[in-house]
Image (cartoon, rainbow, N blue to C red; front, side):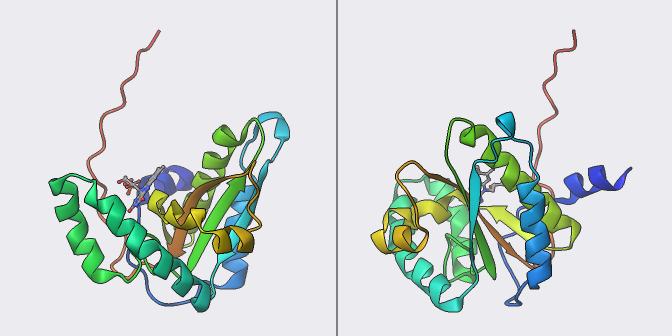
Length: 187
Ligand SMILES: Cc1cc2nc3c(=O)[nH]c(=O)nc-3n(C[C@H](O)[C@H](O)[C@H](O)COP(=O)(O)O)c2cc1C
């Protein structure tokens, strides 16, 4: 199996992280990989906000927790049960206490198609360097806060993808969850 396929197969969503900073050069390489994603008309309509500072992560955690609880309230009993185990282990269940959180911010006509590919490149590049990642949609729960919007310079015509949490896995890379066989019609 070639290295690229192996890396795709080995990528897993990681939710528990060592409290160890990711080296700057590695983060830059991961962002560069995101930045090289294909893009409609080569528009490259994205920018990145990377959160690493403990104070800022503390702020995210404080804002996320009550919103996460409200959100969880609406979910099924089965989902709530599943989250219990995770929630016991982290302070911020929306950003998983990750050493780095990358918000991919897009605008323009092609952003909905382009930006998820940026996110995928980020997650695959991270995996290739032994770094775990997870796209956390619930990490967006903080984005209606004016202070956060100001810090991110978030404009009305911009949309956030991810965020992607990143860090060295505390419990290794999890087992692959059940994946369906591809549904393919060959013509
Ligand atoms: C668009 C999107 C949103 C996601 N949001 C969350 C999330 O909010 N919290 C979380 O723990 N995982 C989230 N995930 C990760 C998925 O749960 C995960 O990809 C899925 O269970 C398959 O596992 P795998 O990534 O290890 O293959 C998200 C993934 C995607 C693609």
